[in-house]
Image 1 (cartoon, helix red, strand yellow):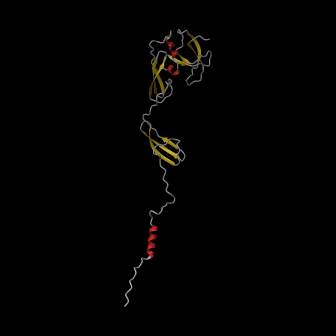
Image 2: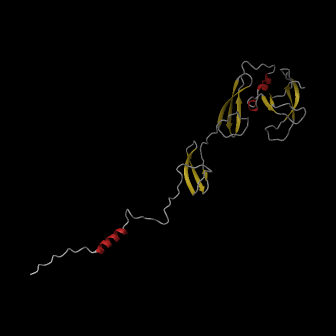
Image 3: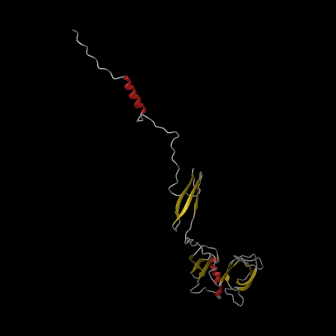
Length: 238
């Protein structure tokens, strides 16, 4: 009687292997690439620090900032038109920030923004003198006390004005006035600081004599005249 044959083990269906491979190929993994169309572009944003007016930019943006100019945070808006930044501010300092004192002493009555008080030194020929310039109600007021010790050597105390070199310094002394040449004859030879009053009844010192001179009465004044005759202590003419 013949022996029964031993059956060989059956192989797994090949189709399963193909199905599994196909399944693996469909799953995203290390060997797959995910793309997006169109690609992601980061939205433009406002700069962390406020830009300056005229600084270049490339997007249409409106950004809000706070700026401190010395009186607390103030709102500011920065606008980019696609080319450059423009800055709009709404400054409301109360009280307003005072302007710094001018480097040179201002002229009496000159326009200013105040309130503000400044001190200056000038020399009328006997050492430094102190003047106080006060900005109040939109104009400068100059107050100076001349106390030359020893006094300026001159036969006529009013002639101390001649030692003052500038219009600003001359304006600080009540007994002096700044005069400039007029269009009449004889015209004042040059601008300078002179006694506030004409020399009528006054003896001029320093070899000077009381003379008539044409000055411009509208210098720094809202008028259009060009000549007025005054009498000043002047050195002898040529």
